[in-house]
Length: 337
Image (cartoon, rainbow, N blue to C red):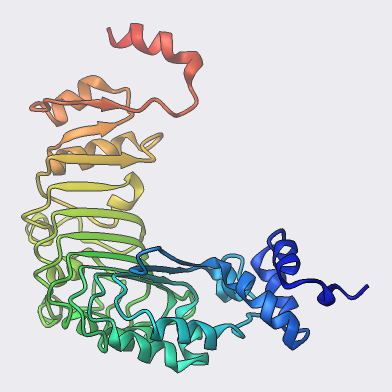
């Protein structure tokens, strides 16, 4: 019996048990298979009931994780996605995976975003230069931007592209490689850094994976109140206190990151909240971060006397005992008493 000869409702019920990638492969078999397979293939595209939020996952294109490492990517659903975006002009929240290659395959998707006057938040993943160009065309006043860069691409004039976003409050960056903004301390002089355009509206910054220096971000986003870093690598001049002190944010209130990252981003400013991860075996560096930020501290260390010396004015202390050392907990409590 031919599977496609079954009732349409029965076929849809059967397809509900397979994943979106298998449905995408089925949809190329025939016109009938396309009619029943494509809706299931697009099940990774989630449109909220109010039609104000749209999420397009990598699995919609047969991508399991990173598109850079995929030998084959299926963008056969791109025309349908373009049609969907053209009809959803009142979106307020949009997240699209594989965006750079997607708009290269189907330019209508990039043009559709030009009509999103109500858009407040956008997440563009696996992106590069074409994706940044699309940001210039969005007529809305974005409040939040999440931008994940393709590993093998560079972003020239990255900050210049963001100047138009005068109401941007939250920026989340991942794997950013800033062409023309070097990772070495001597690559860009202090005077050259001052030529980078500023976005004073930004209040929250998250940076995951970059070799760019911290002072470049300090200049571009001078009013940051919340900073989160992970996987940053850049040379710093630790011997010149006067030089490094001018690189910190004066309004910073919340600082979060892995302790090893603060070897490269030498944040010097008082904060009210400090969240430190990967403190185990980095106790000296942890204390150094505490001294430079003078916070009400949240961390999981066991060197209390040194902590008191580093931050004598702490009023609230929250401990997270998650290093797998439950067997030593009794000793730890007795020792600290």
